[in-house]
Length: 251
Ligand SMILES: C[S@@+](CC[C@H](N)C(=O)[O-])C[C@H]1O[C@@H](n2cnc3c(N)ncnc32)[C@H](O)[C@@H]1O
Image (tube, rainbow, N blue to C red):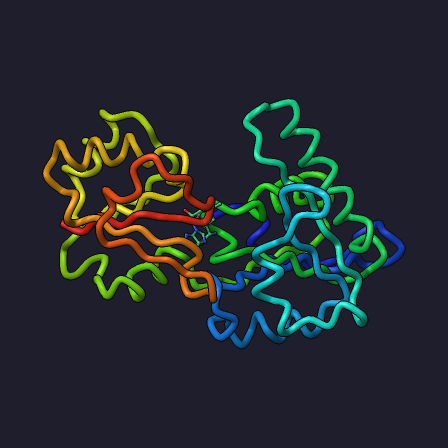
């Protein structure tokens, strides 16, 4: 368990104003009705709503889901840019910048709700943000509100149980190493591949090799108004998929 998951007493905190709380608010996979009652309450109560986006001017999927419950005229809206890069220097600079942006209202005692698609503790930008804030401002109380993950949403939308009894499930992010793909597909009863858009052809090759193509399903923007589902996944070879796409293979 990471340290920041504990509620911290503010006794002896040297800051003249007690800092606000940071909430990681999971807003689910797309359908606003899948936002939890607790997430709804925190969104209503927090004066500052922070949301991730890829670049200035681009839309935030998490904010689109939460929009129904947030009146921007009553809130401070804080768009945080998380560019899609693997460059470590760029990433470090970007994390620091976003942590500083979030610290600003927190330092004035304002609570901040950072919305994330799905669950905040599963492959989410919130994880990094919370770690940096905890390191640099250990007096800030940080809490996560679990959301319905795209992984469990997929099981419901495909009508396929991910696991039952003693069965095992693996979650594998953006992998194009055929050996690793083969290994998980052989070892687990169900495999959920996330961030599949850029590695779809490699995945399709390994599925064909293991004779599992007919047991795979792909979906984009699950449960949202733009949801798409493919049960014949070979159709996707060579096509451009949205980043918010995943594959479930159920043996
Ligand atoms: C950074 S991870 C975020 C996972 C998220 N925290 C969750 O609990 O679902 C992003 C990946 O999750 C998957 N994903 C997230 N939301 C999705 C959705 N609504 N429909 C399909 N896949 C989704 C996609 O594979 C996407 O590339």
